[in-house]
Image 1 (cartoon, rainbow, N blue to C red):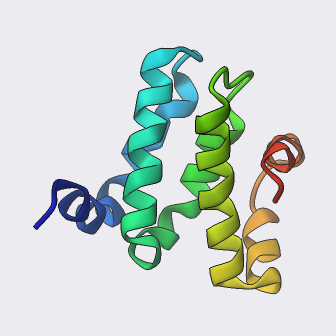
Image 2: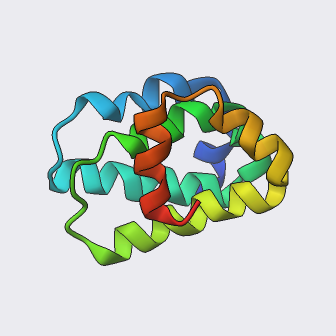
Length: 110
């Protein structure tokens, strides 16, 4: 089994602690960590949906993403979750976030 698939299977249990990336300053290491989270979310979206709130809070913590590729990856992951959940369920999830967090997520087209 591919490493990403193995990690995706375990992410559901570990995402809360993995998504404490909101406490890390914006830099290349944070970018690398988010690339990994995006890969895991793409590999197992239904298995990680229960941790979506943590992921959204971590995404909203970015002040500036220097990499357009990473911005696009995050946008694709969030859009994929929104499509998978449907608008009503997505909006219910967004209602659990603080208004500034929801505003920051709008930068990603969701």
